[in-house]
Length: 264
Image (cartoon, rainbow, N blue to C red; front, side, top):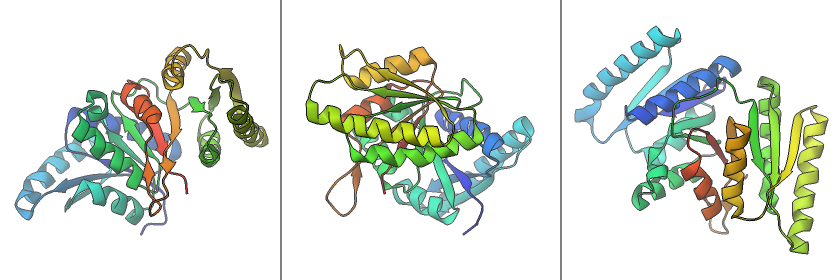
């Protein structure tokens, strides 16, 4: 295992995978973490063709961006090998193109959601080419779950590398118990931000539509560079799921990358 933190980009050589690689290059330029590109084939007979495609991709990146990502071509299965490879190369994050979530094909969506929840590192999903070079405006939805606190270490990450402004968005609800938990999470997030001298703005959604819809509308109006969401732990063998609200954000984020974090 390499001691240096890295960025893992799975590819199937499609257009949306190229978009993800473009995002990874922009992140790498700021955080100075090398990029590994992973491609899996189903059997040995496909290795040579895949290695040829990978070599062409590496040449393209080298000529266009003056960097040379490292490549991994292996016989395997993305469902297991993305998480395994992320561990092997000490990845700080996985950045993957995912038009399938937007298309809402049930089988493909299920596949992507399983990928997200099997990784121990954050998983950034990309649907479109990068608009901005940096992650300077980050949307940080607050809800009533304890897992919200897991986002805090990523406040430090983005504060260290970017001039990030955090847009804390909380729901508009009337339930006293839920409001109390939201206030606890909000106070915790603000304390963490204040300790690090991070800039932030606090919003409450109007409460006219579903929370996830209003979060996305605000993210678009803010011209956010990133949305950070959490998966939800289950009580079964330490597994995680992506709740319908987070699935909605993943599917409809458009040009805004979404970082999904599995709570520890």
